[in-house]
Length: 344
Image (cartoon, rainbow, N blue to C red; front, side, top):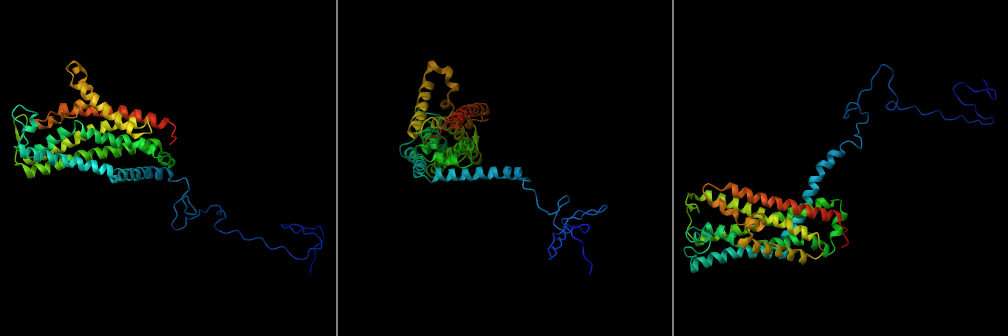
């Protein structure tokens, strides 16, 4: 057996100190998958992997932007669903919808019992109800859009932000990664859906009551023309959408006031006062110049649908006024809500 002199090292190994008798373990072989390929050879991707990826794993940063883009609408819809559930499960709101549905029924029964207004009394819409039950839907909306529908919308919209602040839940809503702008958009969308539901309840209750209490047939329009029954149903749908847009514009006003206070009754009362003042100003002949700029002056403009042809110009101007009010007061609500300190 050959020996190695002390101090002399075998090529490729380290010199062992004198007196050490046990050999060191041989180095572990490098796994083939982790070694570099030989020159002139390329490594084949493993099954289930893509070209340029050895392990088949996707980098952590890949797809993050796509996932966020897909997840944001889903999160918004979930928040909206929660808000709609809160609105339509609240007993107060359900009671108001029930009252809105009952008034057209009572109105129809009164007209059936005591008759409609005489010639030259009241709007032409009321005079047409006893001759055709479909006009009860138009007459009910014309009656309720003056005050009761605005009060109902003011209660729901005025409570949207101030109500949360008043009971101390607004801070908890903002702790979720929803953002103030998204939360405000969800609140307004929920109120707008409630506006559509409220107007739809009035129209549906009035239509059913009119079909039961009065004769139904082709509709004689205010302009003197006649349209078939199905065309009349379509025009009722247009009226519902128009009035709901007007109520959504009022909801933007109430939402802006709701961001200015932590007491919901203040926002509700402020909205109702604005509606009453606007109606008073619009009734003064001396102030006729400002009537086209008043929100309340366009709420009953849906009588343009009861003419042949439909006065689309009047409907368009009304929708433009609604849009301007929604944008202006929605911007006020956004500026206030995103910039104020939430203390409750």
